[in-house]
Length: 156
Length: 156
Length: 156
Length: 156
Image 1 (cartoon, rainbow over the protein chains, first blue to last red):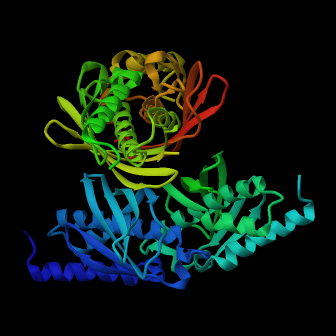
Image 2 (image 1 turned 30 degrees about the horizontal axis):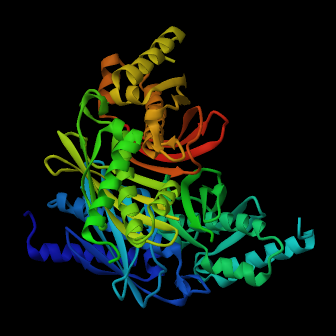
Image 3 (image 1 turned 45 degrees about the vertical axis):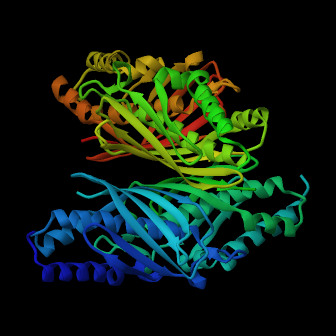
């Protein structure tokens, strides 16, 4: 490993800051990084009035679900990329982040988005030189599976 | 036709009100109905700081794109459903709306989400007793195609 | 449980017969049921010249992959349906099979389809009155993950 | 333009030969190139007993549909790539073909696959240095839309 634990902690801190403070729409949704390392990531979002889609059932808007799944897929894929870039400068990492993007996304809405909060997590199915493929899941506070997704990301 | 033009205008007005005023997340995103009838629908969203995803490129967050495409697909599918329900009471229509929901969604991000505003439109590929399938497109103010999507909706 | 073990064995036998003998394209592909019960299913396909897509790399055609994933998703979803129909007559089950169909399918091609044989397996994410959603995986004989998929099936 | 009409005709002939003669699974399915140029492509497949999936309704197997849509998407994307490679040698073109592959595919089954024959056609939504995205449609002999798809292809 090219970096020691202090460097790793600093890196994670940087990713969290970028993620929550620098990406305006993540902030608008109220997303927080719940846990993060090179292999996995979890993001949390509290339910609130503004995120409702079905006003009769008072459930999460499908767009919030797709947004959170896209974000967790991207974050998981990006962590894999960072792992490969160990030893690279912050400038190089930021340059990669600027080019990083979602190619396509599939979301399956399994159950109504009811809950006090929601946890999204992702896992990498494949990571290559150009593309990463991830699977994502969204559970509510009672661990009910609300939605799943699959995402393809450009990592060059 | 079971309804005259005055009834139709009233119906469209109702759908617009529900869409923008009653669905909190649509309001948070700043979506507006640009045009609406039984066969087609257009939704507009103005670019603003809070909707940015890539803070280096200052482009639209992928979650905004997926949200708008999900909404326009659902709105297009729901209009087809309303057409079939001509003559039904407002209560019956509201009941159907309560059950209406996205089953799954695919989004393809074609170009960076740059623009002053974005227009989403949908078309129905198939509508059955249980399911409707729609295709959706998102263009920017210069008519550049930013993203496309396909959605499956439960219409029972 | 409404059926005893002898009935269950007979049912599994019937499903296998229908699957391999009665569905011509499954036969053309050379699919075989590897294991089958109400909760899970595995299908095997031997590599052979006729199934090649990339003639330079001698790998499985993407259409074979999507076919096998569609079939295993459908089989897994159908077994869940059969479980719910315990006690129903063979005629009723056959009637349901006639209406059963794929609504949509996503396939992610992760690695080149190289192998002596391939095993597909599925798991049900959600099963409702109208729709079942499944996730599917295809591994080669060395347990390398070749492709994954997600399918939505009409079960009414 | 680096190539004259005779060269173009020869190129089209080469693609057709590779497509039907060299790709075994295309031959097994009985696919034929109906029309082909740099901007568009059509592929035809005759209905026959061996391609049946639903033996009660006698309709096309979903795997045949997904196979044909994958193939037409790939062919359309590859023609765009060939256009960019005008002037390149046959060896260079063959090398690109060897690396060419499907990243992911979504298929929407809209109506039962009934018909004497089926025509698949594709259009390119976006073509970049690494990736091409295409939309595909399958119609029967009565021009009924049977299925649509979206595919992402690696073109490097």
